[in-house]
Structure formats: C-alpha cells, structure tokens
Length: 216
Image (tube, rainbow, N blue to C red; front, side, top):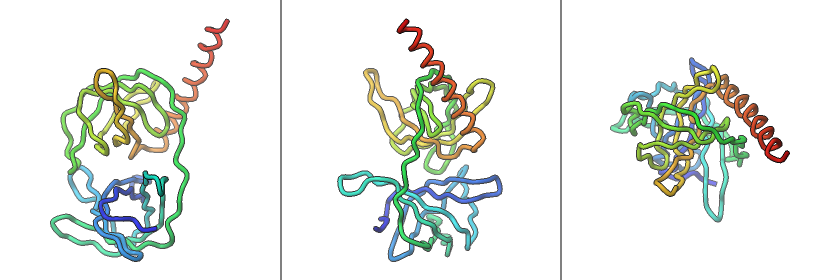
C-alpha cells in the first residue's frame, strides 16, 4: 500500500514537552520516501531535527480500503522552500491499526474555543457547548462555521480540573437548526486525557443509577 499526495497524516514524536502529535499533508510519495509539509505551531515551523524517528499515521475511508494505517519513519531531509517540507524515509510496511475507541457520554459542558487557521493563527476566543465527551474527543455546538479538518484550541472544566487541548473537526453532524461538530483530540496530555476518562466513567455510573431509578 502507498500513501498518496494530498493525504492528511498525523506525525507522532517525542518532544521536549513530551509526546506530540502534528497534522500535516503529504506533498509527494514514492518507494519508501514520503515528503510532507513541515508542521506548524503558532504560525512557526516546528523544529524537527534530521534523524528524528517518528510514527506516521493516516486514515482511509472507502469501499476498497478503510481503517487507520501507521508506519515508522526517520526524518531524512528538510527543504526550505516557499512551503517548508520534510523528507521521511519509511522504516517498514504500513500496518493497519485498531481505531482508538472511547466510550462517549452525554453532557452539557460550557467551553471556550479558539478556532485556528491553516497557519495556526488564533482567532478570537468564543463560547461553545460540549454535548458529549470521551477520552478521544467530543461533540461540539458552536456558532463558528467550522469545516471538516478545521482545528481549534478548547478549554473546559470537568469537576475541579481544567482541560486544555487542541482538536480537529472529524465529522460535521447536521441538526434541525444547523450543524454540530464531532471533534477528535489532536494534542492533549495523558494526564488530562485520564482526567476526562475518569469523568466519563463517573458519568456512566450516574446515568446508570438514573436509569435504574426511572424503572422503579
């Protein structure tokens, strides 16, 4: 299997602040070489050294092949063109990986979102509402007209904990009055993800108790 140009991919690597995930796009691919756009953060190119090992993942949807695929790669070259590029050399074969599945629970949690542009420029913060939540993402109701793959920064509280993360729109959900947005976490610390998972677990117990009371 061969990844193709214009395919959106995620790069997973260890950084000074711990594991990081960056979304970018394939510009060219041949043999065991994949050339991707250098990831950006706050409008600046993320400094990734030559020789850095990372994991590259992408997701396919279609009748012939569907699923998430991953491979290990090493950064072989950097190109300082009008669009900064990284040349990656794959270390092995593409492997199909299991989708990350997290239990979602219905919630009504006030949030603050900051939509991000393609250059990671931050637009003004605005309020939003989380309608369901899991360790992998959330369903968002927002007045901002997001499109598929748009990114945002989001901040919200679960219990006494403040959650701050970066996410992207994985699906658009039509509603009677407009549309909601199914979002997947793109950059969230493991500590915060575990906090969300614990909250979801407690929420499951609460909903189960409410359901039992309704039956009695």
